[in-house]
Image (tube, rainbow, N blue to C red; front, side, top):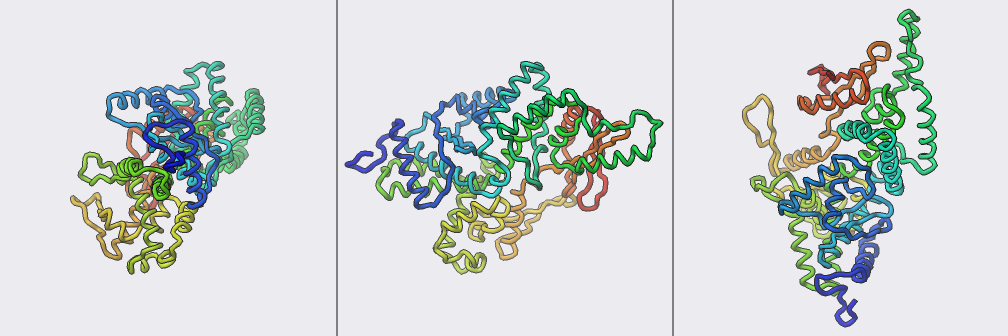
Length: 508
């Protein structure tokens, strides 16, 4: 720090000493004033090409090889070189330690901003939000991905790249259906557990699955006894099963032990990212609020210049910009914009409430302790519940939100809810539902297996609001399920309310 001026840095250039003292100043505010609780931080400086590489491998610092990652790298690189897409200023990994990638092209002001945003905002959210605490294991993910990378490389050496990619292709295609939504997934393997897995794989290579070993070998056997055994095996399968990859990993008839381990690796990656899909708005809103608060505080303390603050505000404004619905850039509600606005609104309600705020939020208005409210919200909510709890009428008006209904039997849309008391409640509830990942993702489950006949695997899709599966995606799902199951796979589309069968299809 310049002792005469008190500034952390001057100009846009930076070095590691400058980064270090700026990090220390940010940490003092983050932990001391904002009371954030974070994993230990690991900051890494990377080039634009390395950032593109991180994009292509879903942001993981250790990732196995697959052709789809290279394809995405070429696509992203092409857009970047043509000037049609920019790169993120940072990338952060939900791990312990929390790894933050900083672009080497950033100015020092931007390095400070993204450090506050990622290394403290996102980091606090990762460590404290209940969804991440229950569904991910930050302390084990890096060691597990190192194991996965080495394991897949050994599989390619032993079984060939084509054989490994065939399994990974199908597993990647089923990733969205390869997560536990309603029950907690098993914890990641420790080194001792992975050693046990390797021993189990070696043993299974010499044995058959216990589930299928007792199938009747002859049609002349006792039918009643065989049916009883089949019923017991169905019970052991714990059907219905929502996690398709988990079911295939445990019960497929054709997969070898190493192929089952590949399915496990892919579903662990899918499960790792599942909480991020449930908390996109809150996570980005938290990080944006933190960087905005910290950078303004640094300016108030005289540690950064006005020009640096203006540079930060320019970037911040771009991040929280919400295009109008008729703007060519519109692609929905910007999670940075709405998330940050809700955090700021909570602060306003706590310190300067209106009469309307007192009616809608009697427990939060006028308390003055906005920080405690925010810390509690960041810990105990996901996007859907956060929206239901904290979206205010004032913010609904600011974003000019209203509710449209579009019924299939009517040739028009209807404005169902406007800015009145009942309308605010309906708008908030409808918007919250749109952030419910469980409601927006297809609910496809394994419901039955023909253990005595052709070994057909039966799937069921619960149809909501009369919306059937898109034909191409449905057929692709059946194709990949059959590849991994080995026998016929059928899919019934059943209305979730009336339980009426609407459609049925099967693998070719």
